[in-house]
Image (cartoon, rainbow, N blue to C red):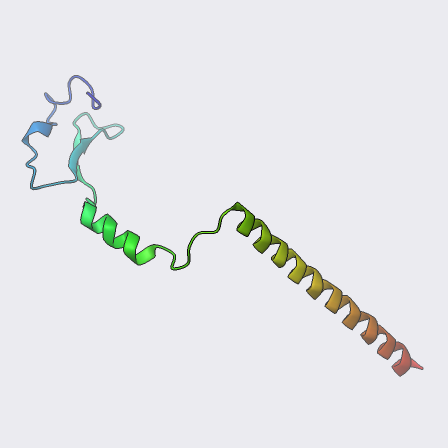
Length: 101
């Protein structure tokens, strides 16, 4: 028994929880002798199916090779941005020198 041998004598009558109350149970609380009755969210199979339908990505999942190619494209795009920024900075520095003259 998860709650311990004396839980029933202390009030945890788990066998008296009706099937119409899914999610109801008992827990041990530090510092309290008697088990406490709790109710947790109960998610039905239909609820899970609805969540899967609502939150499944619309595009097919990528396989390992596609993920690798996508990562390479991201790195290449970031490198191109860095190169572009560096070139812009070099041109700006030259403009600063001309303006100072």
